[in-house]
Image 1 (tube, rainbow over the protein chains, first blue to last red):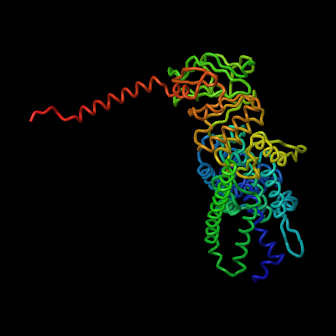
Image 2: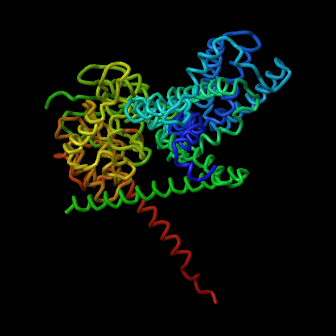
Image 3: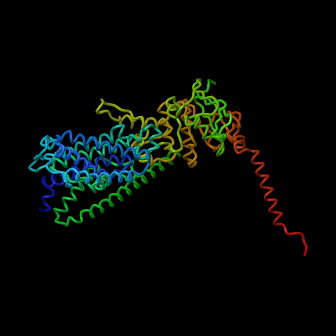
Length: 317
Length: 273
């Protein structure tokens, strides 16, 4: 591999491959962060859903489609419970979903070992409905001489829909308001609690999609899948301009954050650097992104305040 | 004068055994500004919470547009057209003006799956409505957090007016503002009055109340000290009533006594040596 390849079509395809599943999660996590909450169980949920579908299909002999449907119902239920606990207890979602993270992480290993005597579910490609599921969720296709994956299309479509909802619908307005100040939002009739619960469910559903994509791509599922990824989703959203305090951010930005992540991951390999340093690089990117977000926000406010003052004084004369 | 749009008669409110309001009556007319004045703890906030449906009175009657009713919730009050602008304004600083203005009541268009927020309508309407209040915003995308305190108050007032308020209750809108900004808010209060709303203006500053007020209710310790129209009350008389002239006299007497005593203490002892 040489650096020139990086800018070729093949290079783009390689960058978009890790970016796509990360991007799907980053979009959902960005919506949740704009709504003022975090979900630390989002990464491990991709493993849990993949394992549920995989275990039902390989161990119980189910068709992969209903097995996936059960996994989706489970994900939505956990998302609902995460949201319900956060809005009812008013505890930081950081803590509530950290608990969910550990519960799921333990259950992933425990249940998998109980049912398969290993920490891996193999042979998913042997089950009923696999070929169709693979074609639907995560197949390869050729374009301009390079191999892309359908997960990229999913990601682009999801980004467009999420951006539209956030920017152009009533629900999107409610997401911004709920993250900005849930009490102020409630005063004008926004159902902030329901918005938050819905966003936790959306995040869990995105994790399910990524979990199934991983199943059909790798033809197996491992119990450690997704652990640690939750921070990568948050980092992508922050690189894309989401404020950690909620109430501000962009879905398209989060997707761009995912691309930057993919470029860094593939670029380090292409450049012949030591991949051990990847996470250090990620940390530096996060720090820079947070500082830039903070700086631009303050600067924008300072400029507009100066303009507002000038206008007021103008009006007084 | 026609009938009052909103009236309370002989309102008493108890919190446990604490009497917050005792036998208070008030009338609010269309196209008039009724100022509710009083020192801290006089019962102003309890009264506006009753007027806006947050609290229910222990005793007394509530009339709106001539009909006697019991307000169950702020939501019911809003639906009737009684809008309250609280000090925190319920505005989101990071969101653009147009998003704030329509928050919770977003105009929508399009068929079901593609139903969406009518952004062009929202931006246009915000600019028009604020223009009617005398503010020329060039950019509806400006975040509310970048507006001055007076401008923010005006956005909250314009929002209430636009959504069909007949009675506008303003809770200390000038309290945290400088002179110029407060002047701006007083102008918007006059605008709301000119648009035939009944305005209730809560303040403890007589200099803000007198220029815009038509009718003045002064509360002290949960009781009505008096109700005057502007013609019946000079600014000086109002300030005197508000500060409680008798109390001031008593206070100055007390201060004299304290000062006198200290003078005695400092006086040289009778010559013994």
